Length: 233
Image (cartoon, rainbow, N blue to C red):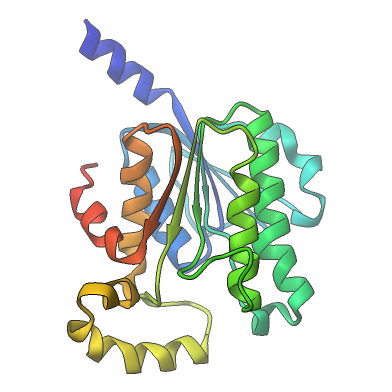
């Protein structure tokens, strides 16, 4: 009887994902749809994705006016894979808007709607006091989402992401060609700098959600492949 009750509870859980058009987000969305943990997956973005699934509810939103969509942001677990680059955003201000403002606003609205867990992709080196603008913004985002009243906040800090991107990121492609052949040399303290498969980041996110751990948890890049391997859908 207890087993049936637990299974029923799991079937009624909902997930919300932002950033499903990105590299990690794309893998994450597919995993959420496959998982028996969720009966519904809400994907929010600027455009609908070319994907149809009985569990999937796509919501087109304007992130600049996210408060207008607060009623659509009710879910148990929030997966935030939003992120850009300064080059793509066009300025530091625009980058800050995507990687900090949009993330924190989404998290705040979802928390008010009763979400219990936030799972968010950050970056290796995130630090609110960093001299590097990118790392500083990521660190400030991490700091701010922890203040929103979630039962659990899971922060993932991947190193260089491996995977096939639809968009062109020349700098990251160059870094991949340089770093990937050297991965086997990155052991001990250097292990956290190894490139990591984007799919492993997504799998680690779902694995963390399924553990139902309260509090704030930060996962470094070298921890993610092991978590990914432990995931059972």
